[in-house]
Length: 370
View 1 (cartoon, rainbow, N blue to C red):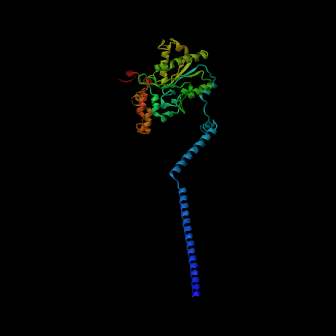
View 2 (view 1 turned 120 degrees about the vertical axis):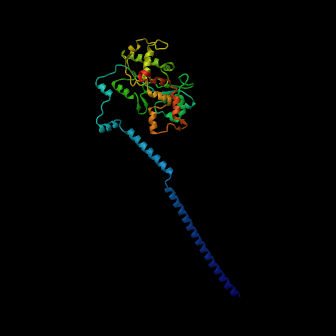
View 3 (view 1 turned 30 degrees about the horizontal axis):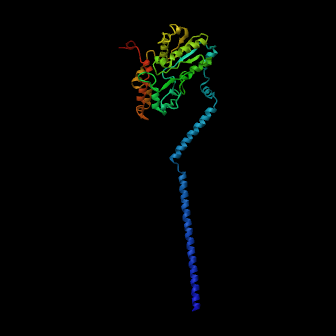
């Protein structure tokens, strides 16, 4: 019996070993399967990540577009700064042939030199205006141009800009707490805006002959206010009188040549009447002041009989420029752009400018049929 029990125990131990080995094999197989499954999962995740990386989103397109624009801009800017100043002229001459000499160089070759001092009188809207005092909305704009230059403040703070460019309806002068004054010097009206010259070319040609700022004077004035109010507020007429007298005295007694443009023609006509009128309403220069100090007046586009578009501007702000804008973009000017009804606010502002009344057509029945 003992031997039989031993044999059974040995058989049982062998069976248990075989079972253990089989269980161990099953565990290894299950582990291998799990590893294979996890590997497949990782591979699938990597594939999906790779696919997501390769996708081109809208943000990527925008970034790429902005990057291209910036790159092209910087390249062009670098080339522009690195390019010799004479390169555009060289290209133009290569295409069209040699360019003629500017008038100033021609006159210099002919022996023309400085003799009479020159006074420029700008017209309406061509002279720069800068801020000397304003409300809180105009912080940071001290002595910055509100009119002329880039007109950047029109887009940044349009309501504030219109408020400061408008005049008082009762006095025709600045509203309370606002002081807008004309820019002084030749820079007041050499350029109206970047690339849009007014007097710059003429100043450059006179400089080639030998003129300097001591014998050239820009009679800048606030073209918004009435002619007489330029004297009441800024003493502009008195300054023009003093500067002409000074230039005549410092240029060997040679009389001044006056070059008024557009509304500046009417303004200088008012000056000549004012300077010979007795004080205090006039300049007190006497009846022969103009004969003593002015050699010639060369009017450029003088509106002696007025300008028809001044009427349209007062009634509706509809002028030639607005008509062109309407043809290009119909209905655009009537929209409420940034809560700014363009023409209505422009009309409200320009109707406070007393100077526009000097541009109203004159003559009545004598100038047309009844």
